[in-house]
Length: 157
Image 1 (tube, rainbow, N blue to C red):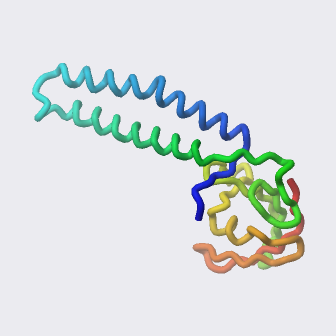
Image 2 (spheres, rainbow, N blue to C red; image 1 turned 30 degrees about the vertical axis):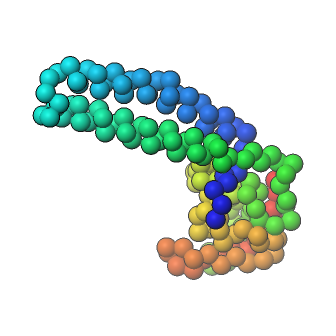
């Protein structure tokens, strides 16, 4: 699978703001915490220093990951969406064949996934099962709860 991550313009802006916050606010705070802990004496027995260094390492890893995500991010607008089949950023209305319950999901990147607002990740079992399906088709999704079947009712941008 490619590392390209398709996101909306709003999500890209949020990612940039989060990276800026980590670099401009969190990184200097981590450096200050290390400096304060260093002043407290012997570094071999200084748990506060060890914790501050570990925290800084975690922050640096998050910054690297965010920079990588931003480098691989591609903006996808509603004009670019093909609604003839389920793809990223499409809204798909499905009916669970077993329970006859209907629901609408928007297929989004992992960064944007939020089940409460009806946004499911393209890499989730349901997202992967729905990808490429057309209206009228039945998608079989292997989920932890077992095999689920969803009938595609509608696809929109």
